[in-house]
Image 1 (cartoon, rainbow, N blue to C red):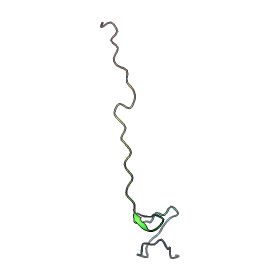
Image 2 (image 1 turned 30 degrees about the horizontal axis):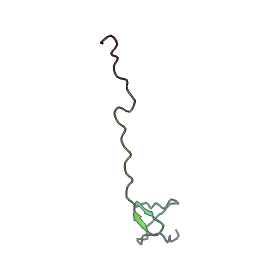
Image 3 (image 1 turned 60 degrees about the vertical axis):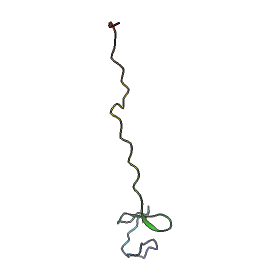
Image 4 (image 1 turned 90 degrees about the horizontal axis):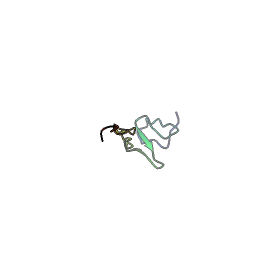
Length: 60
């Protein structure tokens, strides 16, 4: 195994092509660091499909 210059100093880094290490750190272009987690996607609303109001035929 070759010494990766991106290693955080522990000597145990295994960094893939995307810059992710097995420990969860990511290469930010300058150093290895824990990246903040992306914001969760907004949950779909319960009424995702448009609904038509009930017919009032014959009630007027």
